[in-house]
Image 1 (tube, rainbow, N blue to C red):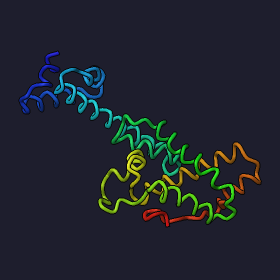
Image 2 (image 1 turned 30 degrees about the vertical axis):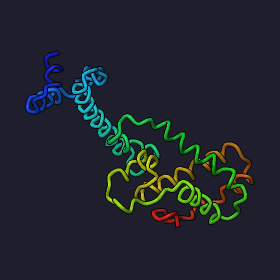
Image 3 (image 1 turned 135 degrees about the vertical axis):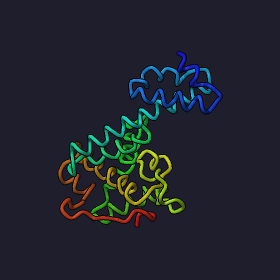
Image 4 (image 1 turned 180 degrees about the horizontal axis):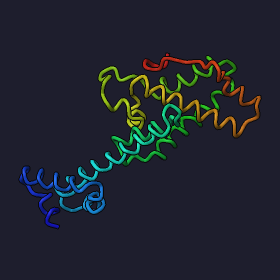
Length: 209
């Protein structure tokens, strides 16, 4: 309790000393500090959240590193993208963002029934994502770290070429999974006539072209 009262101290030097002491206790400190992230004391609430966030990011970093070491180059791309995002935003609701991607997929599904050529399929997806929804490259701040976190790319509808390519790729994956589970072979080929051996690629940094 003494540490908690000092954590809200107005003297910055005292706060820094207490913060370092709490951090030295390691991740278990987050467990007893977490309830105070809802404190009625604004200073205590803010500082408790900062320290808990530090530990949560640290845990997410360890999880992401373990994932990379365990799977090497053969890993689940979507799982890796969300684990990377959690290193900065450990409390994101991944299921909610997956539902958003599912919403994009459902909107596209009906539009692609008439597509008979791979380029038509890619064109329709590009038009929806980069035309109607307005996804595009962050030309004003290309090196902004936010461009690399999938949740922020979906929030802001802007990113770098890699993250925008991930959005496009996940939509394709979800469309194909739906097609495999719900359509006949002929219907599936009509909906997504993409050659898996020689896929059609598109540059997506600038409006999908």
